[in-house]
Image (cartoon, rainbow, N blue to C red; front, top):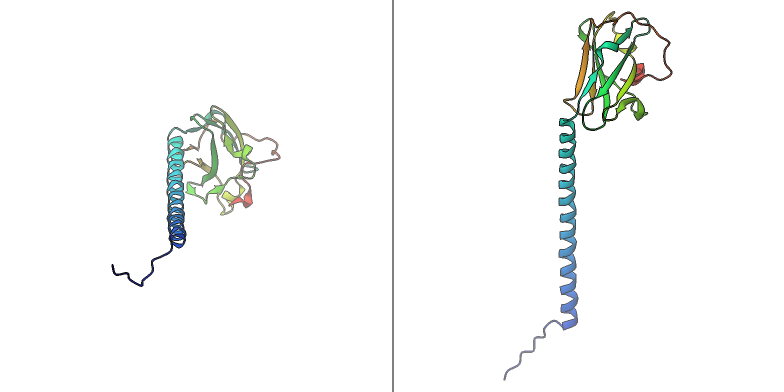
Length: 179
């Protein structure tokens, strides 16, 4: 019998190499699976949000919409007629039938912008910034929510639109510097 003088890898080193290879493959698979599941979770959350938005709706109460032209404050009620809570995010205004820059709402206090299911929100909105370009008459106001297709608007004239004055509240939904 002829023996070669070549030596093989010792069983201890072979075991260590096998364990190291297995751990490296496990680490790669773990990283891939974590990324894969996070990506699908994000897609699922976005899909759930879109479904929730599909069943969301707001309505402005046209009977109680009031415009105080002296203080540039809009007053009204926004009702959530959808299936989940919804948050108002911005307001678009038209002054003298010209669209103004959108006004971002004061999101620092969620009680001012969030409306629970089957509930309403009493709103006071300071629109002085919409009149900074020199317009004189509010002709339309549109409330937009966090869900892109969910909004409602009121166009002048509404009953009592320009005939209401009241004391200015402590907190308004939007301020002049919120653009």
